[in-house]
Length: 203
Figure 1: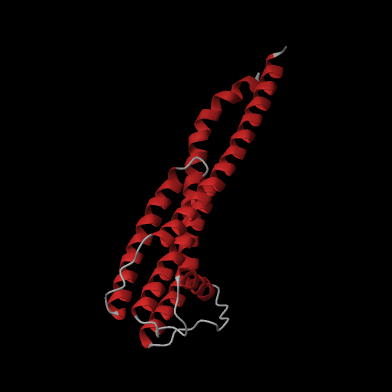
Figure 2 (figure 1 turned 90 degrees about the vertical axis):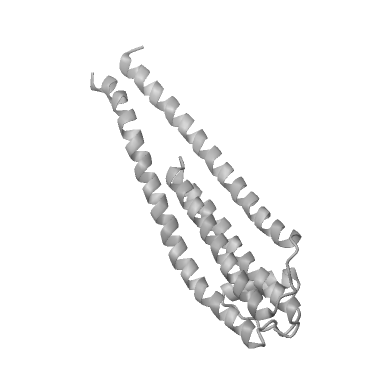
């Protein structure tokens, strides 16, 4: 077998291995995204929340803590995207998990507000109802079955609507930028390693 033929077989083998590795990466990305969503929703349904403080104080505190938690998770995930072998897949994972974390943060706020003051909304909210109301607000669907009644609830809903726009705009831009940086790093790493492989073809 000639040197060129051996080189072609080697390239085919590497391409096949790369394809299998890519499929495994996609599968693991789906699994990690699902596990992240399950962890976020599981925490939401299992953790007991403090409902004894006044509604206004509780809402402000939870918005601040939720914002800090969300920012912390996003910063960690963005760094992971840049270092990831498949940055685009990691970026998709980050977007999915961040979305559910964002929804759960506001669902917790609405839930505790409703428990602290049953008249804060047009009906008392349980965990599923609070999550449903958060999703409906994000989607700006507005079915009208649940609505904020007192001023504190209306203010928090208004904050969510404004943050929804920021979430969709800023998070997507940050994730895309991190994915591009990761791709640039990957190309830079592969370039020097691929150079020796070009020598046999030049003969």
